View 1 (cartoon, rainbow, N blue to C red):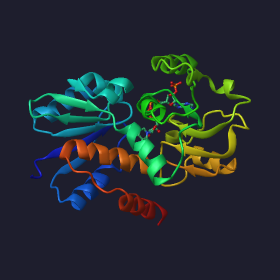
View 2 (view 1 turned 60 degrees about the vertical axis):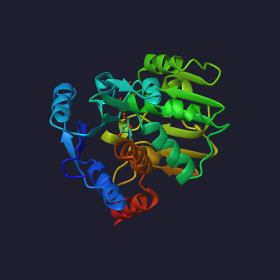
View 3 (view 1 turned 45 degrees about the vertical axis):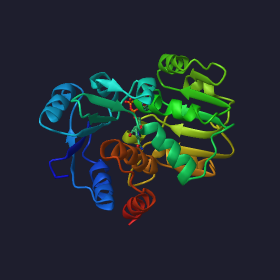
Length: 277
Ligand code: NDP
């Protein structure tokens, strides 16, 4: 174990990423020695830059917006959950020189919802906003928890319908546009659009929240996102952002790379305290 054990997160934009700090905290906690940096990489640059990174001895990469589908295509082999998601957020150099692609977003989200926030998914009516890479990553792990219904609503309606159809469970999962949500209500709304990154909110009808409903924005920031504020303004029982998911998906990536699972609760508390300071 030396600092030569190099890891990085690629994305665009990337400068506000908390991943280098999280992985350093994991390394300190578990006694691992490694380096983890954030690198601005556009979609056009991705394949060349990732190839160089691994050729020069890099051990693992995280890939974020807008690179997850490219990372899926880049990986030599994929885990089952990455295969289902058709999106990869974690690349790992294997002993035989091949690159494994995994998707830890879904398990990160489900762990944050169920373990950290005691939110029940079984039997719930769940709405996912957005049909991009993050949405792809979370659908299977959410379906595994046996919700009563899972609706995917997206700005580009055809993408939502096509994504829902991929999972071949028309009894549970359907796709639609935002305007089709009129008159429906949900126990849990997951915002997997990137609207919050530009301080925007998808056009959501009123009456969307069932009694004691919970709102969860996969995006996070130093102040409550537009969607978290929308949830609070519509009397959600809880309106949470994706900081816990970020730490949990990172812990799963760390486990894939280093074979040791860091404890997350104290790190989520620390990051929350820092942004509230
Ligand atoms: P993508 O670019 O793949 O997809 C973006 C999605 O957002 C598309 O469905 C797009 O709709 C929709 N969208 C974008 N802008 C708007 C808008 N103004 N109004 C309505 N819909 C909009 O991004 P990802 O799926 O990779 O990421 C989505 C979000 O999830 C990001 O905020 C990201 O930070 C967050 N995330 C958080 C993680 C965590 O660990 N906390 C992990 C992974 C993602 P259309 O198809 O019509 O273009």
